[in-house]
Image (cartoon, rainbow over all chains, first blue to last red; front, side, top):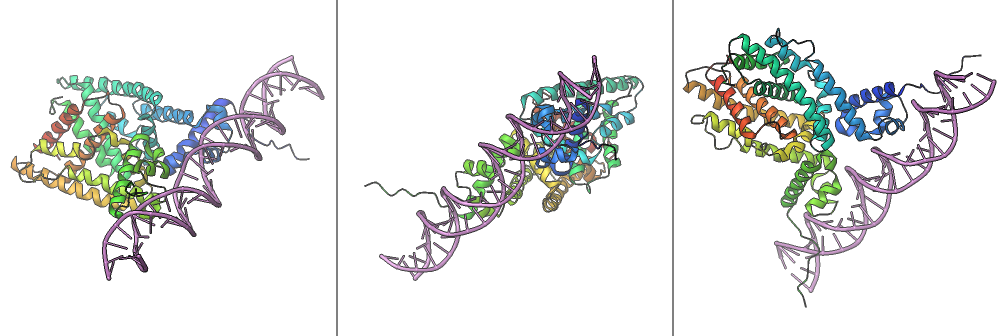
Length: 202
Length: 202
DNA sequence: CTTGTTATTGTATGAATGTTCAACAGTGAC
DNA sequence: GTCACTGTTGAACATTCATACAATAACAAG
């Protein structure tokens, strides 16, 4: 007699939550916010429909969990960067590659930004996480400027770099024929180098 | 006896289309793509539900019309700028204020970008319109560089400026506490001036 | 083996969605 | 006044949606 076949896989709550978050990212990536439906997500995650409410309470709470996850991978791009020894190349690489580099995430970020701009809870989270990111960048930038004997406004340059990287990534993701990704990196690098050498008066 | 009261206002097709497009923009602005529903749009436009299909054929076609309208106001920001006599200030002003300046449009653009990245027809339109915008910018930038006696890659600087402006506007729209809009303008201006004087080697 | 906990399922439900369509009515031509 | 044209209405329709919930079953503890 064959071994008994369980009717479903029973996971720990954390593992199931993780699977649902990843499935959500895939759904968002492919079809945008229109594809972010309970049916599609659970199909992608290989579970039944009831689990989103059971593990997250609501679909909105799941989207918040997606944001936390995606932002983690953005922060990870700056991991391993030591403010004292970092090079401009490493910094630009970190900003451009953390969670972003992949065009796949365009629709994920579009959905998240839309939600952040409307949902006060997510806006608070966004401010907190973004401040961390900016802080880390600003420290590295100021350390590098110091080595060159120039004084800069690290906060201002950080905003400049983040905005430029976001804008380039956005344009490139929407229309891939616009520019190659190494060209985007080159543009960022030139601006950062100019800022660090005092050429932008920042 | 009172004058007969018409049961509804009968407009020309063009006027009705315009009203529906404007109503769509308002709906998108307030609630994002979630608020872009036939019911909400027609309520906002003060008409019955049947008119979207009647005048546009489908809701998707209406969104395409919204894109055309919004991009027009983006192009209008560069109107009146003569490549030969333009100043960097005027150019940066034009890029930052055309159709963008207003935080109100954040959700409109997020929805449009999402659709563009997925819908081939809108992607083609996007490429065409964006190329026009870039072309106009590049011409003005090259003319200004020439006056300063430097040779630049107008196309590259245009992409740099557009991306930076987009990124700054995006960050600022998502979190208004991040930076003031005159600060954003100042950052753009410094980068453009550096580029025009050859400081960025572009 | 028995039992308790809880992850999981899948149906039920009611609200909201985009589109269709036949009837209606404003408007200008004659 | 009569007519044709077409902008407009609003009910009908089939889907799809998020959520609620009671039944089921996996799994660990004893």
